[in-house]
Amino acid sequence: MLDYEAEAAHYDETRGGVPRAAAAAEAVLRLLPPGTRTLLDLACGTGLVTERLTRPGLTVYGADAAHAMLRTAAGRLPGKAVRADARRLPLPDASLDAVSAVWLLHLVPFAAEIVAEAARVLRPGGVFVTTVDKDAAHDVGSDIDAALRPHRASGAGSDRADRVTAYAAAHGLAPVPGTTFTGYGQGTSPRGTAEKLRAGHYASWFHGTPATVADLAASLAALPDQDRPRADPAYRLACYVKGAPGATDTAGPVTSDGNASPR
Image (cartoon, rainbow, N blue to C red; front, side, top):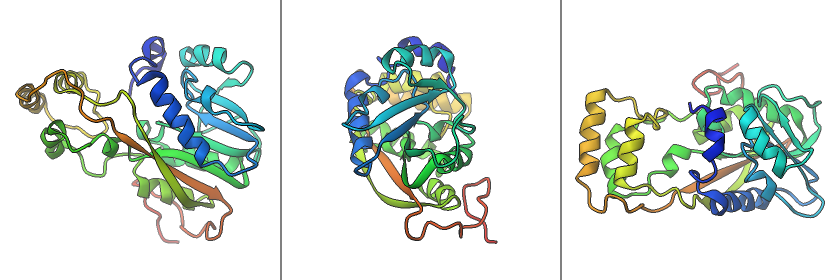
């Protein structure tokens, strides 16, 4: 996992900047029910997405565990950014209308705890909106993906949609239709992919040896247009409603592999 204290200074420009943030915010807003008054954006980072979650009558807060990220977010969200662990929010039960988690669950081994905490602070009828299947979104069918695909660890993502849905069901959250948005500026080039591979950026799905890294980097170096980014990914946003029909605690406890175990 990256050191987000160190990443804060250049995080926005390396993650698609305003275009990607605006697309993410617009997508989250599409999934908020009419009348939503309060939204907490978990792992808000620098607040680039969070500050764009605006519409009449909606008050938005941001929470992040990294001091450096929050220093930037505080300037974008005056009085509305707080340092907090997404697993232990400083909020009472049933106190929010919506919780969002954009590009968070794929980073952590405790996604189930985050979903449980989101469910705790949501009011009945409130929604939890989160990105899912982030690694899969980056497979856009390019020549780079053809080289990478045999090395992808199938089902490794902690934000895999079926796992997140199982976590949600265990805490009274039912799935409703979600949406997608474009990850502007996130298309990868062969040279850039090889550099990230060597730096260990793909730890969530790649578990090869140094020799495998060297072989794969050589395959990427043989591709044409070494510095031309391929297509941008299309990220998926899932949405879950608290207390919706069928969202009762019938799934049983959720096991460490993300599956709901029988009672």
